[in-house]
Amino acid sequence: MSYIPPLDDSRHRPRLPRELDPVEVRILGALAEKQLSTPEYYPLTLNALLAATNQKSNREPVMDLKDADVQRALDRLQEEKLVWRVMGGRAVRYDHNLDALWHISRKEKAVLTLLFLRGPQTPGELRGRSDRLNAFDTVAEVESLLLDMSQQPEPLVRELSRRPGQKESRWSHLAGGAVVAEPEPLETSQPHVVGEPLSTRVQRLEEQMAALTEELQALRRQLGG
Image 1 (cartoon, one colour):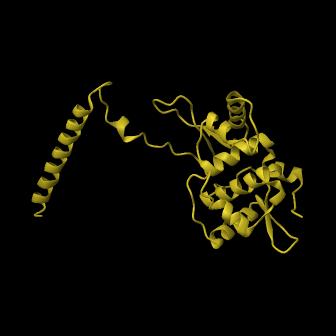
Image 2 (image 1 turned 135 degrees about the vertical axis):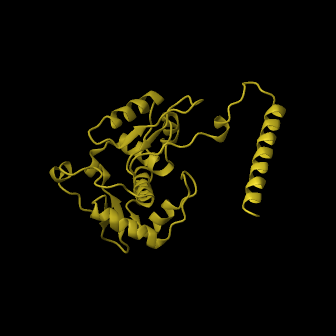
Image 3 (image 1 turned 90 degrees about the vertical axis):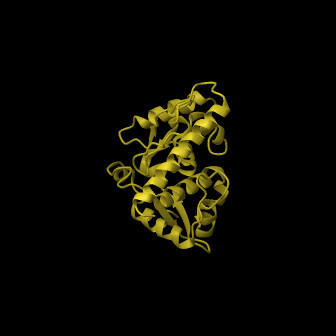
């Protein structure tokens, strides 16, 4: 059986004593996903966990981890008491310890699982993808849960700044440290008049390319190229 530390012990240590790397986050997400969606096959063997981390569906980004990558990450997670080895049967199995260590509900675990596996998402996306983990009745229910999670003494999620044209804000987990804002799409960095004909935009881009080419040629001449 897996060992669960006393609640008093877990309440006196920080949720995240350090930032987790992407492999560790993927492992925790895969373990929590399989526990919620297929409890009859949980805890997971190393082979089953490797398959779950490298799964091509419902993963962003898709990873190509090796046995050694997963084992090293498991060793680190065990040091932080985030994962436990479960002895018994023919193979060693692995069980996450998030419920006891972070004191999270099933709903919170479902949201964190999706954020761990697929990165920043809107409340609508989280609701649409959560059926097998925990069904939410409305998007508002997800939004309320995220807001509550973000206001806890040691928050595990945060709302990202809404970019121009976005109807919903995206949310991200904080297990991997501070979230770096994504750059805006290239199109938004080159303003153009709304309704501007495509031919005009193409012409402007061609002129910009020609100017850059001239500058590059002049630089080559100065360097004797």
